[in-house]
Amino acid sequence: MRIGWFYPIALLLVLGGAFATKHVDSNFVFYAGYVVLQFIVLATAWNILGGFTGYVNFGTAAFFAVGAYTTIALNKALGLPLLAIMPIAGIIAGLIGLAAGYFTLRLKGVFFSIATLALAVVLETAVANWGYVGGASGSYVIPPAEVPFFDNYIEGLFSLMLLLAVVAVGIARYIALSKIGRGFAAIRDDEVAAECMGVPTLRLKLIATTLSGALMGIAGAPYPFYVTYVEPTSAFSLTYAVNSIAMPLIGGTTTWFGPVIGAVLLGSLQQWATVTISSELNLLIVGVTLVAFVVLAPQGLVGLARKLFGRGGRTP
Amino acid sequence: MNQPPVLDVVGVVKRFGGFTALDGINLTVAPSERLGLIGPNGSGKTTLISCISGSLIADDGQVRFQGQDITKLTPHRRTGLGIGRSFQIPRPFGSMTVAENVAIPLEYVGQGSRKEIASEARDILGLMRLDHLADTDARALNQIELRKLELARAMACHPKLLISDEAMAGLSGNEVDEILEILLAVNQRGVAIIMIEHIMRAVMGFSERIVVLDAGKKIADGAPEEIMRNPDVERAYLGE
Ligand SMILES: Nc1ncnc2c1ncn2[C@@H]1O[C@H](COP(=O)(O)OP(=O)(O)O)[C@@H](O)[C@H]1O
Ligand SMILES: [Mg+2]
Image 1 (cartoon, rainbow over the protein chains, first blue to last red):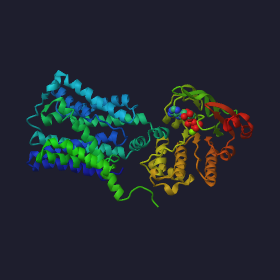
Image 2 (image 1 turned 30 degrees about the vertical axis):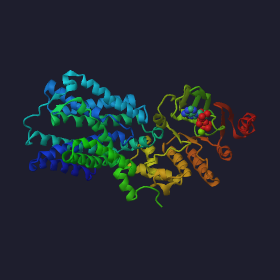
Image 3 (image 1 turned 90 degrees about the horizontal axis):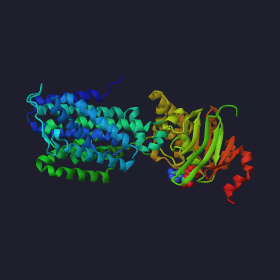
């Protein structure tokens, strides 16, 4: 089997990131980098469902928060380390994605989106009333004093998120280039026609909701260690839903790399704005960029590039 | 008609709200038979083949394919069993090229390698005389090309029963002959065909048997010459 260029580059990226933690002293780089990488995971996860199959999920924050609260609960109950919690968070969030998919995928278009929004509201209310994990007032998580290999835990978290981002993008890429991905595209283009052409649409959509939810949950699991204090409003913040939709739209939803481009650009822009101006501006930035793209380049940067370099259309 | 039928529709009823679009339809198709399905606009032809292909589920009655009850099966399962259909209003996969459109059923219904799929897609497009458009985005096709793509995708399902829903509307005389020739060739390989068509010359020439629907009921079923002489059919088409 051909290995191709993707896996060597992915490996180099992870090694390079881990190497950087040894040679860059500023922790700010890792705090900011963590957020951008986390958005790469969320945008990529969102896009597996929203971009590939065309079902717009407004509930990213719900899956992210499920991951975060899995960490809080399991850390408190069993004292489990983050690395052990992450796969469990993925399984729980994936199962919620599967169940949500099963009950809502009969809904088309905007009704599906509203159902996912409702899921976020319901889960947030449930968590806010769950005393064990701190309820509405939140709870503290104490990061480990020492992490093996790394000088401090933020470097460890950064490298972990880097690994996760590479894995998530690798999964999305694998899907996009596989039979499943071509089935997803058929669903997005015309679900009725896809079924009649032999595509098992329900099964494929459930694969998408499960995988998308699981990746979002895994992305949320390290969050309590990153912020050390978690309460429902921040874990279920609108920012996650808005960003995970805006980033793929800006990059381009039909490819695996569109969300990565969008997350790097929009994520970095927001980190820069947070430092130089104020974090209050972030949602405004996202909103303005999004509107600009919807008007000027509805297919995102990837679509824009393809238009400029003339792929598709009628070839003479 | 001693062979068991490939398709057996028994008393199929389909309602939309209070409106009965199909009112107890019975229909059989023998293996490799060429059946014409005609009737005025709104008589229920498309609804009937949707109940056969699975995009609609019959409210009552039974659909049997090669002896198996498929009344409640999902469309993709029916496609897998050997029912291929074209859509009257073309439903291409707009983000894909013409060749990629045809490759979807080839990949999901068959089990060839990517290479075999690509080469079979070329063959089918060649047969439909769409090969020069293989790498064009499907959304850039005109109406006639879209109708041919519908048929090409239906063939790519490797059907034992192929249903063509008004694939020839709007085509020129030469193009109609071209498509008739292709469908005959497909039929020669043992594929049964249900042809829905308004072009009488085409459907009468092609079909071994004609079924006529009117207002959700079957009003005639017989050889083309018989149907032409049938006073009920004339009344349905021309009004009282
Ligand atoms: N999805 C639907 N909802 C409501 N009415 C429908 C639907 N599909 C078809 N009909 C109605 O059922 C009747 C039969 O339609 P159709 O099967 O498309 O006829 P034909 O293909 O013979 O022209 C028409 O009166 C049409 O308006
Ligand atoms: Mg019709």
